[in-house]
Image (cartoon, rainbow, N blue to C red; front, side, top):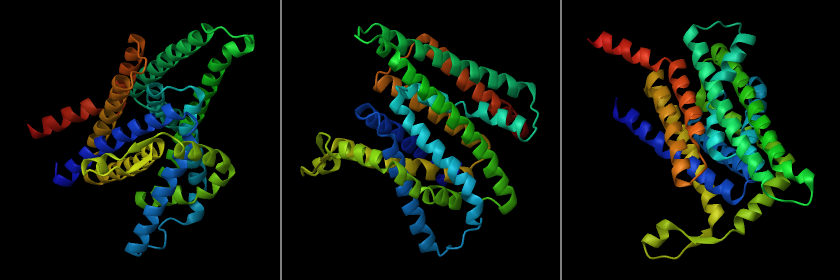
Length: 336
């Protein structure tokens, strides 16, 4: 592994894992800040992309803008839905486990749309992932329901309100999962037709949807106001040099989330250009597992033995699906 690839691996762990940390800080302080987070990420990546094409002079897109239309709409919906789900009592560990189920949606879409057929190990892995997600979802759902029922309220309809809201959050994540899978198929079709231009796609999928945030600007402004009005904190860098520069705590978390999101995305992009798909799969899978562990330990999120079993099924299923073990054996036998 060359120095550039090694640096990308380190930055994937640093950028992606710290991004999840700042995201959890934000949603714990303000669960409804999902739209603000999504808009901030889209805006920052779009600005960086515009600066990049102006500096490089690559003003003409390789893929015609009209061909991005469907891709942009689906990417906008999935991004907003995934972050908005935190407003529906979805805990961070369940959110991460659920999004790891993208392989299920990809396989179903591949069978229905592309008429693909898979070997037994693929079906086994998807069964394990599905079982793991269902187990984690049921356990999380029962804890939400039991916690709500144990709280006495005057209005009997309000007893199940938290569980109902949680169910809506699960439905939102499920819809986003399948839209994202179909988006992957559309992206694959575009790349076959026009060639691979991931940097360009990254720019336009973040730039073109920006006007769509106008329809939820009131929600974005409301939660931005909450962030600005949050408790002030001294900037860590400033305190090291003896200065007392203060900033609203949530605003600091938001800025850090945006920076680490860009670091995460750009590092994965470098990794895909410098390493084989096996290495990328291993790094991304391990990164998700480390993020999950950190969320459980550091934020003390509730996680039972059933959650661990479900998580194990998801990650083992992912490794089987991506044929990591078989590829390692093949490489080892070739070297020998």
